[in-house]
Image 1 (tube, chains in turn orange, green):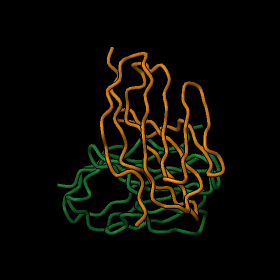
Image 2 (cartoon, rainbow over the protein chains, first blue to last red; image 1 turned 120 degrees about the vertical axis):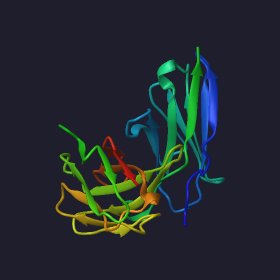
Image 3 (cartoon, rainbow over the protein chains, first blue to last red; image 1 turned 30 degrees about the vertical axis):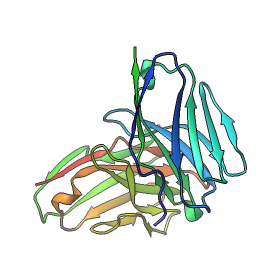
Length: 111
Length: 112
C-alpha cells in the first residue's frame, strides 16, 4: 500500500542551530501534509501543515517545504531549543480523509 | 473542551480475551481514526471513519473491528487479543478534509 517515510532516524542538533527533518511520501494523490511532534508518553501534536498547491509555508520558528516533483517534505526548525527534543512525524492525507503517517525522526537537542 | 478522550488509559489482557477501546470527541468533528504505535515506531492506521455512518480499513485492520456509534464516538474492538496486539493505541479526530487531526493521550495495551 501507499506509505510515508518508513525510517526512524535520529537527528542530534546543538542548541541554537537549525534543524532539518526530511520525509519522503509515495502517494502522488495526497493533497494535504502535516507535521506532528510527539513527546514521550503523549499523543502527537500538530505543528504545521501544507496543501499540495503550495511549496512553502512558514510558522513560528518552523517552515515546511513541499517538493511534489520528488515527493519530498521537509520541516525546518530555526534556533532549536531543548523543548524541541521529541519525535517528529510527517503525515499525508489522500482521498476520503485517509490520514497515514511516516516512521518519524527523533530530534535530540544538545545543550 | 476535553478534545479527544480515550478510555481506558492502561489495560492488560490475556491472550484470547476481548475488549473495546473507547474514544469520544467533543469538537463536532466529522472524521475519526484509530492508530497503533509500537515502541520506537510510527503510527499505523487501523481503521478510520470519514464521516458518521462510514468506516474504512487502514493499513493494519486485521484482528480489529470498529463502530462509529455516533458523531462523537468511535470504538475499537479486539475480539480475541494476541500478544502481537501489544501496543499504544491512539484515537484522533478531524473536522473536515485538509484540516489537522487532534489526538487523544493513548491507551497502553499489553496482551500476555
